[in-house]
Length: 281
Image 1 (cartoon, rainbow, N blue to C red):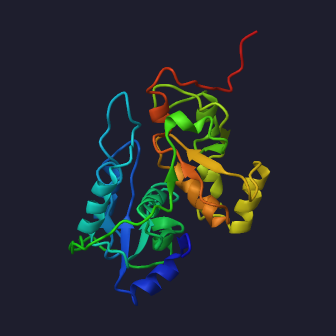
Image 2 (tube, helix red, strand yellow):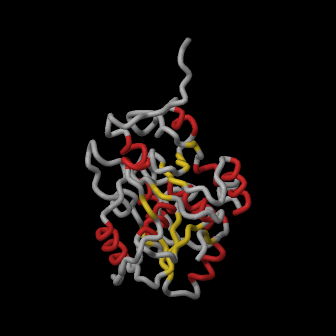
Image 3 (cartoon, one colour):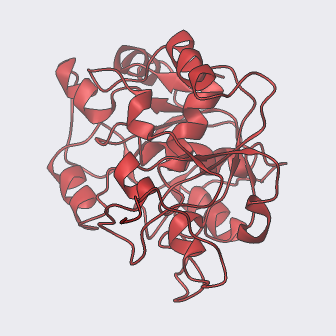
């Protein structure tokens, strides 16, 4: 099973495979209601809406968790069953943010052992650019039975990430990593020892994923070879999944995810913080 699917491929499969289920994962970190508004305006026919905070995250515990903690597995399985996802379903996720939110659902399905899931390359923008149909109606929910299997995706806890021996990748942009700006979280900086590989650099100028060979070149240039064990994080465990998908697409073993990410890391003042700020003379 591949990691990505094109709009043309999805349109063809939708006309042939009754087991394919499509999810609209559009969201905004600055406006939680934006994704559902966009879905209501127009979406891929038959697509269900997956809300980042309500469906793809668990409850926030102030001072303990990050902004988008993973839900309990049984809660996520119940959500999949409500949506009609069974173990034979082919799943496609899309958004309009370069795959940043769709990759979260891709990762989570693998987390409960479901491999048949792909991200729509180019997202809803590419679907519309291909003049493919949209609709405004909401599909009926037909519950199904889903049995979780051994996880394909793995996680690591905050207490273990620094000393795990992995090449640690931060998916946020360079200025946030450096500690120069922080538009979302109360403290700026990064986990000591991490390397900044912004997820947006996995994309071409047309906002589709780069080819496997282009991504391989990017990661090799960063110091990641085929035998390098990697761990990924970001601000809240969402865009880190984009880097994980890109590494898998490039042929690397799947990295481990620190799901709490930076927003969880900074809840404990005993955890060290690194910056790349110059010290005044």
